[in-house]
Image (tube, rainbow, N blue to C red; front, side, top):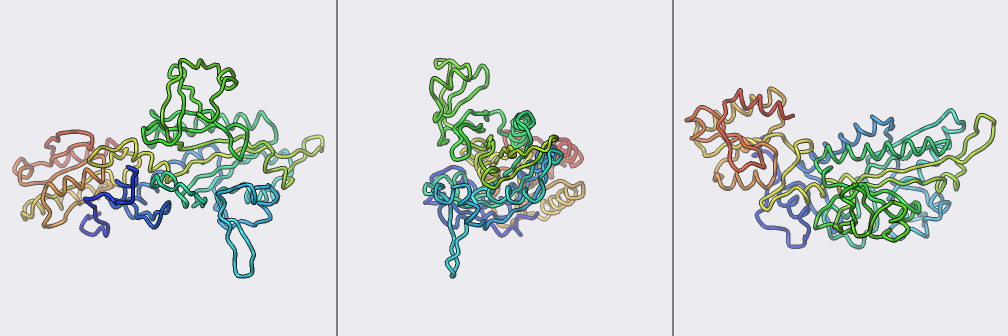
Length: 417
């Protein structure tokens, strides 16, 4: 893509009403646009990153046998009354029409997926089932102050699994722990992310969170670094320490961001709707459930929080908006001709490239914008590189580049992706 055609522009100044690093850098880089506190629109660069995260998650959900659906954001009030959450859930958006009819604006989808499954599950032979979606969610977040980490509208992958017995559920639940670890590894934050024992909130007594360590995190976790076991401050007591075989004096306190969670729902949501099945003997049982969430927008924001530098974002190669940022320095005809040749060659072999072909921009301005946008590779065509019959190539995380031929450039970039 030619940068001269990109409708978004970078900003030098940080937005005055943002205090979080993720919102500051994403807005300055032209990835997102703030509509109001806790609500953001995704612009071309931001959407490219979001779609790559989405595809990684989708691949992993499909790999474990998940079936993708798309459920309604409008949810019947009576479903929420059956589970008791219409009155109990204090961050639930309730929407009324002119007739006075009320519906919930979906923050989660247990109240939708369980009634759907009643139409299709009746026998032990129907199990197991796992269903997921990737969809906008809505929660009445009164502390929307951390950019896209804590939104009123956000994008989430929620999966729901259904089981006929405890053993089957536990096998799937433990597999999901590994699947989530793979996802966080693939998006570049696995080395900073811990499976964390936590409170289950409105879902269950206990749950597991995935917490990414960063000084800007709102959660406090305690980590036993020898075993890799972690627990949230909310469940930090002697009973839990004994259960997890942890010594208080060996735990290290960290700030962290929750990037995912998994819950053992048991029959909490299947029972109110009488979601049941008959076993081999013809006896009736209530279905066991689990749910598994990852906030895509929160995950994107977390990557920016933990992997950025003072001068901009450092995107992991797996989710970067482009593989390579090509810069043409100066308005010399020879330089522009060579840069266009490089651009066309990259496109021909399928490399995702952002081409800074903007006229009238100084080298310093282009370098500054490239650092802010944070693409993994930067290739520069200048009078010097043309004279040396090559292109200057460097990684985002490297201080200095090197002159390579066009063939070498194509080989290096293709080998990395």
